[in-house]
Amino acid sequence: MKKLWILTSLVALCFNTHLTIAWAQNAAGPRMVIKEKAADYQHVDEGDIIEHVFRVYNQGDQPLQIKNVKPG
Image (cartoon, rainbow, N blue to C red; front, side, top):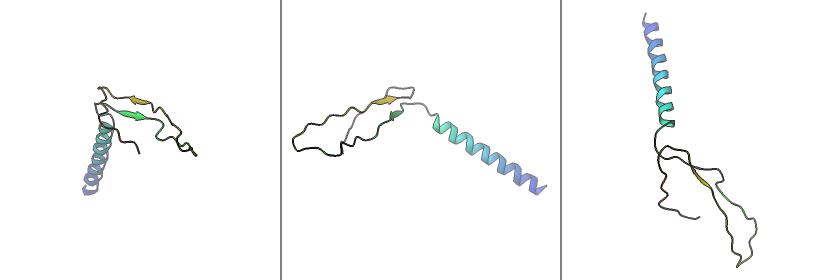
């Protein structure tokens, strides 16, 4: 009987953990997705002007606000 109680408790704990993780992954709010994380230009001559466009997508269910960008 004790083994059954321990097994039932373990199964309930695993199920609860799975639900918590699934809920956290589907949380409401903005969700920023950037498919291309970096641009590598290999070699750049001094004085050259370089431009690159990073596409930022909001796959969440609320507006995404980008308030601070730090190039690096």
